[in-house]
Amino acid sequence: MTELGELRKHWDEILARGAVVAAISVDPPAISEKLRQRLDLDIAFVSDESETLHDVLNVRDVGGRPPDLIAGEVAAVRDSRDIFMATTYLLDERGTIRWIYRPESYRVRAPAVELLRQLDRLSV
Image (tube, rainbow, N blue to C red; front, top):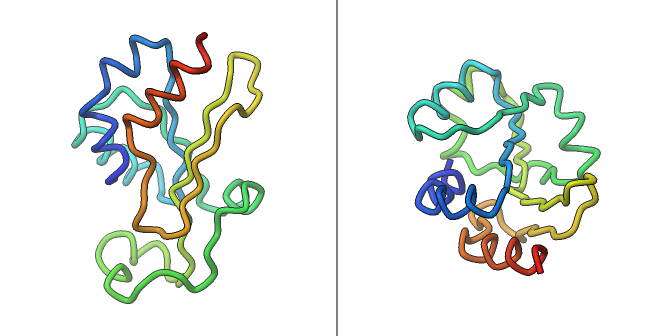
């Protein structure tokens, strides 16, 4: 949610560069849809409730979810202490990964300005 909120501030700039944004979430589609509506973003959410894709992408931090995050609506559907790092992938039109931003902490997100810089670099 934090990263998507930051992207929202630069949404027109991202779209102007021809980017298509998709988010992969372990949340059920209904929760992701509520977030999409709240942020008012035209973004595709892919639900990975089984956490299969997250494991393929190697973004699971086993037991890394702090106790204060184990509450509310998400806790009702996920009782795991695992957390997934908010990793950003930039793919070209052929689907080749051209840039990855993988934080060392679940609290860190890719800055939108860095994403814009990388989009500009790839379009040269």
